[in-house]
Amino acid sequence: MLPTAHRPSSPRPSSSRIAATLIVRNEERCLARCLDSVAPFVDRMVVLDTGSTDGTVAIAKAAGAEVHHLAWPDDFAEARNHVLACADADWNLMLDADEWISAGGEDLRRWCSGPPRLGAVCIENSVDGSAHPTRSWLPRLLPRGAYYEGRVHEQVISSLPRANTPIHVGHDGYLSAQKARKIDRNYRLLERELAAQPDNPYLLFQLGMEAQARRDLPTACDYLERALATAPRDAGWRHPLVTSAMTLMTYMGRRDEALALADAEFPHWPQSPDYFYVLGDILFDRALADPAQAIGHWLPLAQVAWERCLAIGERPDLDGSVAGRGSYLAQQSLDIVRSQLATLAA
Image (cartoon, rainbow, N blue to C red; front, side):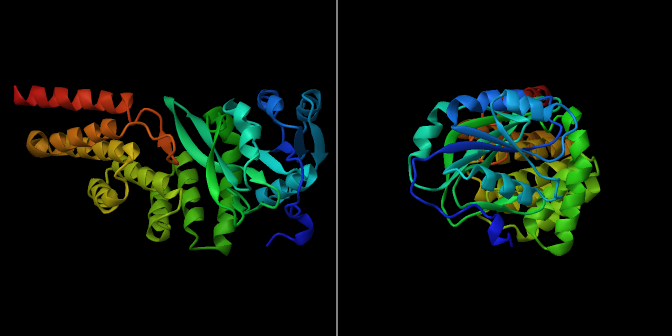
């Protein structure tokens, strides 16, 4: 539990001052981009430096941010709570240096004029080798009194309801050039958290995703399967957990398990183009492995799955969704399977 002295203060009447809050270390590559994108929409920018040895601090000051310092505590929640206390604002837009506001900033003040709630912003994550970002909805617009728990992949603690905001944020921290220096750190911190909470499904999910990024696919699969066993049905991150596990099992040749998982999850994702897109991939993979039943069974089922994607359309509101799975990516896959069926039938 966070010590009371380090928690942001309780809500109080005020004129709704908005602060952008960041924790940084050696971010001269991208910090100016982040601060320039948010400066027009907030009253203050508050940066907590945790030991930079490059030009980060000078860049932050030149952009108009106030800079505070804290020795890195090896705990993201502690650092985020510290910068929230430094800001002491009515609303805090929590950003990372490798992020930037790409849309919706002009609606920030209007949204903050409403009742206190946790504001989820759409993080659009650039991915190596793909022009299609993955989308995560994370509570980043926090009213006074909300705080964080968790050494890494920290989560917001508040009894307030959560609502999506119009704000979209670009993120390039998952590209390999940026990810390399963070991946071992995050994995180590997650392992420490899991040692204290060995059955926490969220930690298991995050470890699975980190193991996949390290290309340790058997370990990733194990963590994701353990997470699936106890993940709450209503957890916002269950959607990327399911689609990631289905994809990874298929990639590893575990076709029967991937299909069994897809069958079990079928009733729960009737309006997810991502689920049906990955299901189509599983069925197409089965067709390649079982050509005797390809034309009469597997390929027609894959066609139905990808047609369902187009019927649903894009769902950017779903956590972990991938742009295009409800439109052009599904159409491309559908064109391929229709061509295969026409060729095999000729």
